[in-house]
Amino acid sequence: MHKISRATTIQQVLDQLDIIIDDAMVTNSRIGYFAYLYRRVTAEIQKEIILGNFEDNARMEIFDVAFANYYLDAYNGYKKQTSISKSWQFSFGSKDEPLTILQHIMLGINTHINLDLGLAASAVMQGKQISDIENDFNIVNNILGNIVNEMQDRLSRVSPLLFLLDIAGKNSDEEIINFSLGKARAFSWYNANLLWGLGVGHQDDAIRQMDLAVLRLGEFIKSPKSTLINYTLKFIGKFEEKNVVAVISKLRKD
View 1 (cartoon, rainbow, N blue to C red):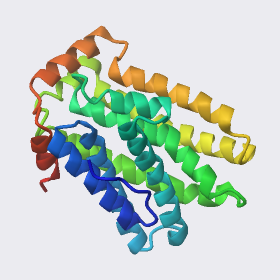
View 2: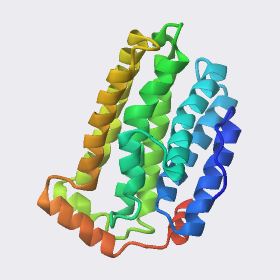
View 3: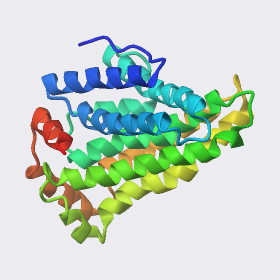
């Protein structure tokens, strides 16, 4: 395993994500699915910063790097078997479970957006007005939403029966995604404001509660309450590409 380091620039984030993806392809680890999606999101944010499309582009790089380091630290902690958040432990720990590719991706999205995004915004804006970053925060969420929509289209290359999720649950794939994206936009901003208001040194209990709430959402992604949806996901999974190299290679193709 290559060593994953904390990043100080967005380019370093991309480089570290490349290492994670490469390791996942070598070891056939499904951890690579979310890492691939996250690299797409990060590359898009980098592009928007270069184009000057945020209110404060220098601050956005600082914010995006801080956000990414929560994931890089969690990945490192999982590999080294040190203590990490319960929700990341659950997400990484599910890598060998017979879940669909969509579920593996959503487990990562759930923790990184519902937990890490609020933590990063609060940390970066300590000593400043957190409302100053709200517009740029929302732009990041919009970028994520666009990439996830693109990913759903690309998933048909490796998950040919994913469309059955629509039929089984009247767009249940959208419901599975929207609870973690649509609601997460409000949830993560609420958490950011709460943590920012509490201030450094007074956040531990709140973070523990947030982590447990995100863990519950992860459990829902892994095992939806609907018997029909569970059955449909298992059926979809039987016909998916199982080789991680093949999956990521097909998702990458333009």
